[in-house]
Length: 229
Image (cartoon, rainbow, N blue to C red; front, side, top):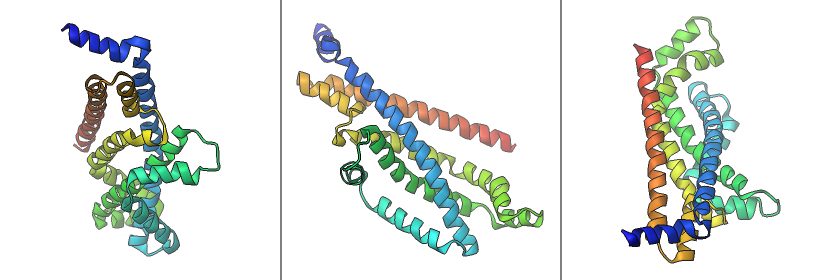
């Protein structure tokens, strides 16, 4: 027991090393939240453009751009994208590492959100779209009031899973020198040469955040199902 206390004191109490964990946790939550917002906005935009093209044949140029974006982002590793964003795209611009991480993870998440949402839109029965048009709604209103609400319910579990993946993917932020949760634990390990306690704590914090996020998504999904009744 005394050995555990000594290890805890060495890793977190001495020299206030717990601050690395707190700073990293704050950056991880901030990056995940902002990147999720970017991913949602970008993903829905791309999904609407692609589904519009699939249904009507319009917006060919925009659809081509979206296809290139999806191919590039989904075909390259997230870590490589992060390094390119920070060391190439923003090489000559003085931007914060948090901003670069949000941009990289947001662009990455947007590609996966786009395909998730597009699959949800395409899964809505064509009769629903035709019913909206027969009621006098134009394409935009039909999508907004009839198709999108049904599509959102269909893809909610997949979107929740994507945000969980996004949260865990931020653990590579240390590659650009940003102190995220994982990098904070690794800094402590490098100082104390004790790997077990800081890394286990990092893993437990990630597990707690993912559990809370999963619980929230499940509750929202049950509430949406209850509203259908």
